[in-house]
Image (cartoon, rainbow, N blue to C red; front, side, top):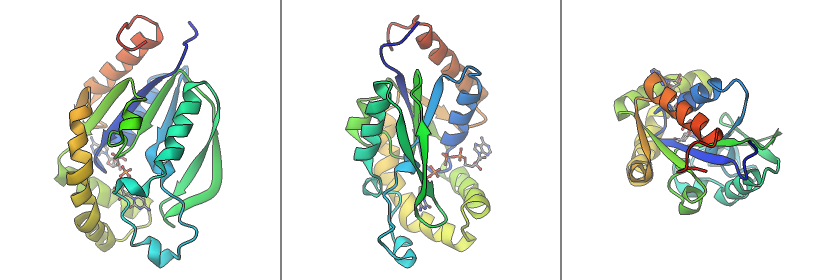
Length: 214
Ligand SMILES: Nc1ncnc2c1ncn2[C@@H]1O[C@H](COP(=O)(O)OP(=O)(O)O)[C@@H](O)[C@H]1O
Ligand SMILES: Nc1ccn([C@@H]2O[C@H](COP(=O)(O)O)[C@@H](O)[C@H]2O)c(=O)n1
């Protein structure tokens, strides 16, 4: 059945909570590839006009770090089944890369990121809101391993950033958005029961059997 508009699922949660892992597992359970994934991180503001040293001072956990207007306009395009050109973010240089990824519209859009539930305009575009809820000790351990292995960071810089920006912004902006969630997934990526439930829910909606999200 051809849908009149795609369904939008928001996956929020703190840094290192397992949002990307949850999203990847849901995506993998759909072999027909009816899902497109949009990461909020791709919409960090470009900082090419600033020298590298200045970019290190940016607070990347504050809502103003993102180009939310561009993200909203891209979701609106996908909702009309129009393709978009998604920016690509490079964490090693703290700005957008020169690349752009063409994204084709699909029946399901998963929007994933720390602050996607913070903006009311984004929340209003979502059919299902999920919050991945993982204790802060696990999140910092996971982030430490990931950022040193994959994002070119030193242990000292990860700890310093966590204490000065990630933790305070999490408490001020991320954690309060849990109240908007329809579903809270504890522990993230290895929660196979929650991931199966999400996949089943999405299938029900795609088959037109769910009157709540149509
Ligand atoms: N349940 C889990 N147990 C152990 N490690 C996990 C789990 N979920 C995610 N991770 C790992 O933790 C790191 C952060 O997970 P990720 O999904 O990228 O989180 P987020 O997108 O919320 O920042 C990754 O290296 C991932 O492989
Ligand atoms: N240049 C940047 C941009 C972002 N970050 C951090 O990324 C975190 C969000 O990504 P997750 O995959 O962890 O959800 C966020 O907490 C920023 O601090 C960065 O370190 N450098």
